[in-house]
Image (cartoon, rainbow, N blue to C red; front, side):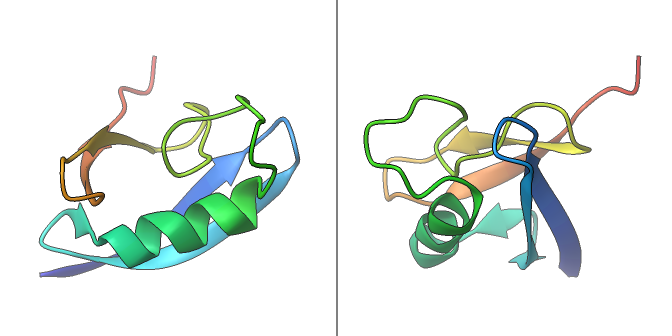
Length: 75
């Protein structure tokens, strides 16, 4: 199943929309998201894909460079 998701980074005020297949982002998608959300090599503003936990989704990193989506609670 394909899911359209938007990851955001409130520190840089950026966002990127990706299509996750089966709740998974490939290594290339993670790199593309990182470049779009932050792009500063030494910046530690967000997670592996440059996202900050202020959106609907979080990411659980995989050893192959990809990531699984995790839905964040809306508390």
